[in-house]
Image (cartoon, rainbow, N blue to C red; front, side, top):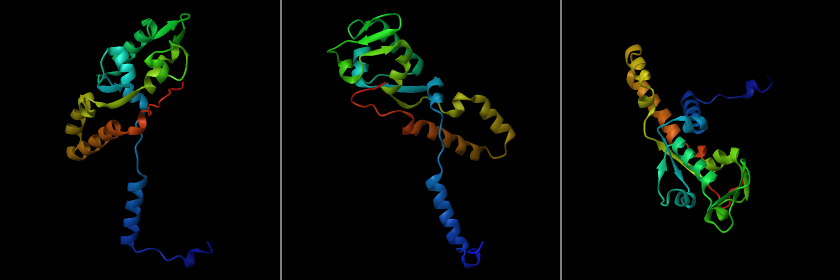
Length: 177
């Protein structure tokens, strides 16, 4: 209160400019990671070492459910890369390409999805927001007067979901769980 009489406010044009600059620097939208895994139009890339072991080729992309099913089956049934010690404990076999990638020797069946999440990258979605939610287009077109402004917002949301590089982890040389 004692300092207020000594403060000289910035002119409105400078104040608005600084405010807009601050908003642009600080504004962000976080999309929930689970959304990517639940969206059937999301596609994922698997690290080449695992992709080669799993698919006998590299550069494959898959939907999450397909990839999770294939990787789970691979972990449970491939005797070249894994040894089952019980219904729940799996060992990564020595002297395989996976033993150099994974910095662990044993894992529990319940950890398969967590391991897969650490060795994949989200590439984007095949469908945008409006293709995934067709009822939204109907609502926006008939209920709102300015459809274009909503298209801009939806394009922004699609961009946040598709280009948020912080959603997927960096694949380290040795994977820890």
